[in-house]
Each structure stands twice: as structure tokens, then as C-alpha cells.
Length: 215
Image (cartoon, rainbow, N blue to C red; front, side):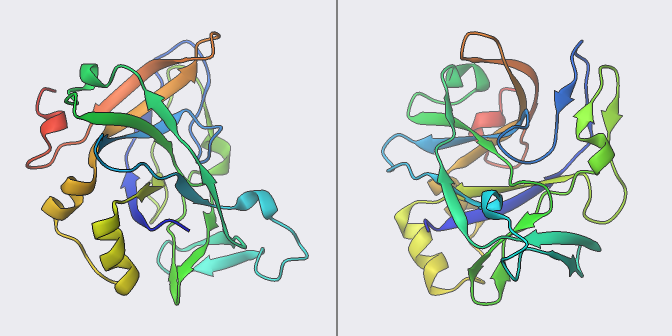
């Protein structure tokens, strides 16, 4: 699989639209992480835990207790690659013309897979009764690990080589930004024309994130 940087965000989401929106993990969700990649970097597909192969016959595809999040997760038999959608109007999000902006889906709810010896991806945890958010409603969960979305971000070859050599390697913020820039969280819904409509956006805010300085 392509080496990825695993990150997780925990936040409250409010539906101010007039439609019900899917907020769980996975490709069918409206929640996306907007990430800018330098045009000069070779784009790689996103590797997600392959929950499409869940089976009672697979010995690890059963709920297992996660001691950190205090909840159960499905252990998937591997990964599958997807190509996330390219956001056409990246400049409107403060992204410079030297970058392409992609909308990356979170991993599926309660879904994890092993990517190196003794190391597993984080899972997305959205309460089962809250995965369809009604108009005028919000979702947040104070339980440890819940109300959090996990994303797998492909990295460039330089950073990927370091992560391959040491799965516990912690890159510096500047090193990460040379590979990609997290722009923010967006809620995107189909607009009926094959494209998407932006319902909401929360910019990432951290020192040096040029893509979010305009918000």
C-alpha cells in the first residue's frame, strides 16, 4: 500500500441546511477533509481500510475491543485504494495556484486495518443513531473517542521513506506541510449535475498554514 499519514479530528457538526445529511465515515458520507497537495508532487490514491471485504469467515472481521477509545472496532483484512475528488475552485479556499485541492473521505465507522507490525489505523467513531443528521440538529459526543473522524492522507516519497523505515516516526509540522496542507473540514452534497455543493466549511487553524490565513 502507499504510505499514508493518519490523522483524526474531533468536532461538533451542525446541520443548518434544509436536508438530512450523512455524517458517518466512508465514501457515502458528506464529511470531507480538504487537503492541498503541491502540483509538483506525484499524486497517490488514498488507502482506506477495506470494509467491503467484511466477512464472518475472516477470523479478524469481528468486533474487537479498542482499549484507547473504549469501543469496539472491525478489523479489516486489508486496504483498498480510492482516488478522492478534485475540488475545482481551490483558490476560493485560499489555496495557491501551485496546489491542487482534494476532498478526502474519512475511514468507515469502527473500521481499522493493520499497516505495519503492531500498528493499526485509527477508526472513525460516530454514534449509530446520529449518522443521519436532521436539519437544525447538531452532533457531538463527549464519550472518549466518539465524534471523531479518521483520515488517511497519502504523503510524498521523502516523508513516506522515513515512515517506512520507522512506523513510530513523528514528522515535524514543517515536514508535513512540505508534503501537504490541511485546509479544513467541509460538508459536500451532490448537486444533481454530477458535481457537489458546499453546505459548510471549517478552516484548519495552525501556525504557518497559509491556506487558512484568509479565513
